[in-house]
Picture 1: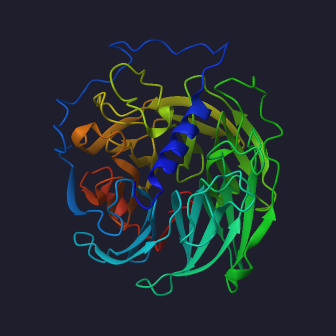
Picture 2: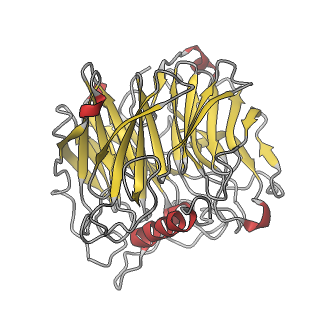
Length: 469
């Protein structure tokens, strides 16, 4: 099962899904059953197994498949980060560094084996950070999967030196309560603050007792990363509404936090609800508002618009393992919800967006990781939808978002349950998609709406650490 990890990782993923979506004895009202009025029209027949389908304004210009040592059955590709002419792609078994100086011909510079799901990834200067949310026997890259209840079990943040892209070097690690499912970096002149999101990976009453409500902030000194330490554990959850212990809205830690330091704001997608935070003091974030949505099952991700006047929250209905984009699921479920930020401090819900292409019952599909396309004066986003592919959509009108382009493949061979685009981000004129089983895709969109973004040149991109353009 792939270095002894496969079964553990799959069980962890299923446990996470079950924990977040369990039914209650007195559930909240169900959204209306899908009808012809609530399901967007299809754009044609779904592609056949592994076939590619795309809008006229989007084309695939490169693909780099997963290769040894990341060629096992569960060596799944995960998140991406960018820096200069390099792209960094996480994998359940480590990470890859690509030279993307020529986006049409990406070159693999190194593949670093470092076991630990899910290896969510960020880069700041010469430092690379990986999240580990799978109990390991120790903090090294050779540590094996172990029982999370073991007193020696380790989960948390690993730090690498990437000054030599061809030979990344492991520097240190920091253990965090409940591990690190994802993380968010706030770069500074002397330190990088790492916000660790830890919903929990498996039942662990000793090291991570329920309800797993925690936020850990790690301080990594830029000049001495070996001195990285847990600097704060602020309680941002004290103002969240209560919930029944067996409710699908049972409070838990955050899945993802997106920061916008210039605006002194953060948006946190936490299991059960969404938060707007004041991060004027990065070590002491304060809750401004908590919102809920009866259509949401798993508050998964958050993205600000460029002006910091809107937040897109995503719902990972089914935990990424289910076919929630077929005709039987309502258009407001497994979708994005668009909130305007009014008076600078209050969230006001407007429209929903879900891809307008019904997928088959064999394709896991739901809203997942994406980023802004920096179009001046417009709100445009690209987003991965697992086997729903990559969607480019415009939410300038918060009440009437619309898709303007897409790329997708047909179902995986043999009905495999997990695949498609984990993350899709725009970087310096191109869209890069980390496909779970197919590797790195590079897409180009040619459209009058998005073409102005090609003039924007970024030097670094961690999608959950936003800045203005």
